[in-house]
Length: 452
Image (cartoon, rainbow, N blue to C red):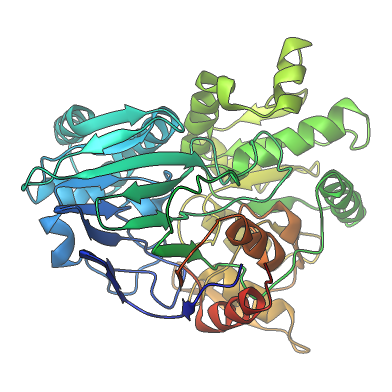
């Protein structure tokens, strides 16, 4: 049903007896941090830092929260916790067990990359562990406010990465649903996002992400493996390396799942695959620790003795010196390396060495935000004349073949977002967030076309 009001690029939302303030992701994709004042409690839903540096700092209002609720463990949703905790925050941090486990890996790495000594990294991790409050899907969590009234929260499956959730909040006067990032139906490994909502009272505000609010993914469900097979086999004809910039959390594991499917079926032959992201390797192990959250197909693979995240000719690259050698390997190989938007990590070294080589193929498997190297490479590839990009202060020509596989995105598209929202009964207002302006406006128009 169409809500009474749809708000785009709006940082402030009033509620009966409360308010919601977007501290980030108002008119772009990152970072997400939303302060919800409800039932006398101040709750921070996500505490993100951007995946690329554009001068963002943690909003002072975030420090006033009495509790944090995490929708999932991507950096643009949890990266700000380092500053928050270092600034003295000592309240509970609620999230699913899988989200806590993955966030712990990511935040330890973030503190280390900031130059902290091992003892400082361990000290931060100890504080983080002390604040962690693991929750189960669909189990009510009571969060008391200073006045004693408080809020009840539920974490609902979001289908974005393992452990991801939408957060439903209910106080005496208001009810709010924050979508977090929503995944695609029938995604490998993951269960679908929840679409069964209680109808006992109206929802005063739904905050929904809009990353792909202006797009419809061209690749659907089971055809993902077909599309990846086609791109890989076409790339193999070029005779060079295949580079896949990938987020370590979620995307690496989905890629491994699809590659396992192709390799086991003999559809991709004699292709060594190197996972050149230490964090991606650690997150993959965490996925295996929470395989109880896998979807039915992945569970059946495990029961049949087929680890869906492992296959022949799959190699883990832990040491940096081994990473440096990959570009010089004569045999074509597929290299999965972080980061997904090419803003850091080992992918930069591979791009610097191999972007000028015409035999190289680069496959983008996720969203490329404005001002990122990934977006600049995509724009350069679409030019009629040879373009260059800057990597490590060096101007690099873009001569490689560039591909983009939209269907592997962990974000729902416009039709899937409207479908998710349409399942919520009696939503009074919809606020769009976590998307660029055009995406929000396009999604708003799509939602307006919904009928009862």
